[in-house]
Length: 616
Image (cartoon, rainbow, N blue to C red):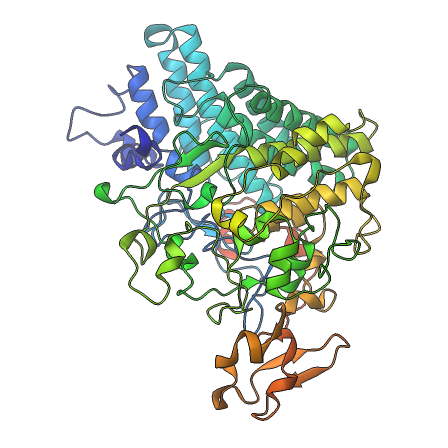
């Protein structure tokens, strides 16, 4: 039972749904709003109803929302055949949902794929506010002062979490710090408030959490201060850099970044966590209990009907589209700690899969298959979310843990690598704004600690080498670095890109850095290419009549060769995914999502105004 905390409490979620009149109905059991709020155990039960929404892991069964690989694929790291996924081009008819549980069968509330966040839905805000009000009412009769502080911190954490996600998608949103009744029209239909006002409220919630949440609530998988601090470092880094790069608000940027540093520091100085795991085991393990790099995880158990399908889409047989592109592969550092254009490693400049695996940071080999796979839209196949055994069933029958939606490998929900990378980036940004300079000790405690992870037996047998430490005294100056990004910050951003492939970060990172132009294939042609390939030696099975006029490669000089049935020897170059074309043109308005016309009209019908997102 302890391992399945995140999957609990659908009944409580339904019991305390977001409708006032539902709470007013007579209960058919002895468990109702009038007699429920009497113990810490009941508070814990209610709190667990938030877990499947915020600590999604690999989602469940066929659910894809907030799940790596199957949900997080819209960014500049990935490319599909045909036309690339486009940003929306007009405000939708409707953009709202009142459901707490995803009607599509997943285990999280509905989200927007191209914004990697929630739709216009405040039910979870209301749920956290209801939680707070009930805790407040219990304070003198049922809770000690320390219990009150902890549980109010839990409720405020979830409220801050939800508002952080809403703000990342929409920017300005209405802020609520209490349950609003049906008759309070001025509150129900109040217009959007500035994101800075909202995030200042979130800051207050998060500061309270760091001061008051328990270090342990009896089980390492229950929400505690360390888990909360990891997420706080994420959200405060996002908002601090957004304030800097989008709003040019240095004061607020410093405020939020300093809290990100503080939150990450709570985890890093605790002595509870360390980089003792090889990279692949973080994602493919059947049991993450005891893994010191994992701060929180979601456990899956077929016997309890708790499964997912993410591993099956990493098993070499299932197709992957979108798939990793040339631009992502080029970003991986060589094991001498230098970008490939500066590296002296033999064959570092050869951009086929085999040579990249041999010359790059170990995370490349642990993330991708080491040969071209036709199951991938770009021929580069990600097998990060399955263990080393799972891929050996390619061409055979997969056991349930590796096929269909019956996968049971555990999902890391919050891990040390993210915390330390949030920490070092926030410190580097603060240094650029007049704060304390980043030291070599800071680099050693973050980037270099990650690079010193152990290698597993498979990587060692292939001759994979750990990446050299990053030295402030000899920072590489990547020829491909953006002119407006200092070398240290560039290398920190690179580290994130290597570490989090297919996880939650990339789209959010390029949004907060104001680098959405990375998604433009016209400006970044490597987005639309796979790696270098010699079809005669690496994938001869595709040199068939069915591929005539379809199979194409791009030579180093930019010329394109199309397979005509008799030019097999010339089919050497960067793979061009079939029928590829760039996404529709877009502007900076896509940093934030529009609200729906229906929601605007609902306000208007009540005599109120809901402002549309700028640019829409």
